[in-house]
Picture 1 (cartoon, rainbow, N blue to C red):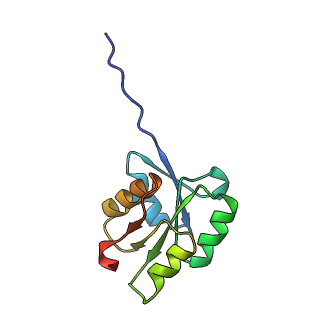
Picture 2 (picture 1 turned 90 degrees about the horizontal axis):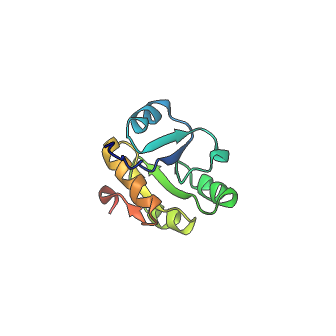
Length: 117
């Protein structure tokens, strides 16, 4: 008797701006598919600019947007959340932690990297 395998849901993730090295690392995750175009209707977008949060949400209000940052600048967390971001993540952290943040954000959770307090 054949065994039924449940298909894992694949999350479409947009990188804005596109980052080939990060795209490859995230693409190695079995449940993440990196897309290059917002028309692909990503569930989660990773951005580096607060203005991109607003622009992406205007086009697709259901997309969850995470802001990638290199450091904890004063007021960034509040500004990102006020712009509609689903969270704030350290850019240079472990890819496994980033993938976990993407999964959590896709379920509606607000995700703040512990390193950013």
